[in-house]
Length: 243
Image 1: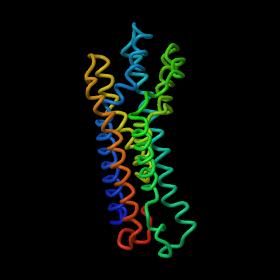
Image 2: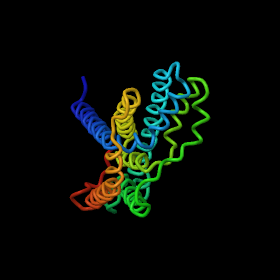
Image 3: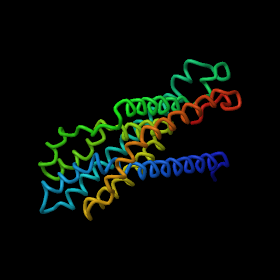
Image 4: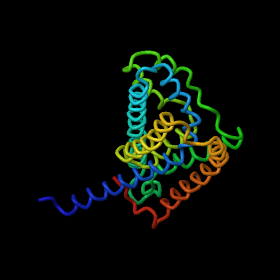
């Protein structure tokens, strides 16, 4: 028989994972106009270079994207987990320092979001991600095309960096992977549907997103920083770090 503590712990983990997946899907919905504008040309290039089997090529490319983003989510979530239980555990004894009870992973997305917002305000929007180096993967075989999809997780993109920062904020490798999986599956579904059926996102929505994105990042950064500060309060952190 399972002990009550184990069962409760299992349900807690599952609830937190479901919450991370819902959050990732929500961010994915929000990112659709931006991703369509930024990554749409990549999808068009894949179809143009593989006209006879464009659907298969596009599907393999997107499977690579899903795998790459999810793996990155695991890694960034693990980083968040490490900074929660690593330095805070070894530098401070329980109850003797507020950082010991704080979720340090919340500070990373807070600072990152504020930086992205500042950059976007300064540059008056987000610049298109430079992805010309990916072109060498598109003209190869289907296996090489899938690898190219994985490599899209390395594209310099403000929206992607924001999602990675949120994956760190989950404070768990599992929740980070779940968050990024839901994020990429949501926007990839509509990306592939849009490329297959025609443009589904009008340019005006992309322009509106570009104007709103810095403000959204600023708000998210403030929220993450406030949550971190609350964890420093005596009643915000109990002196123990969640596993």
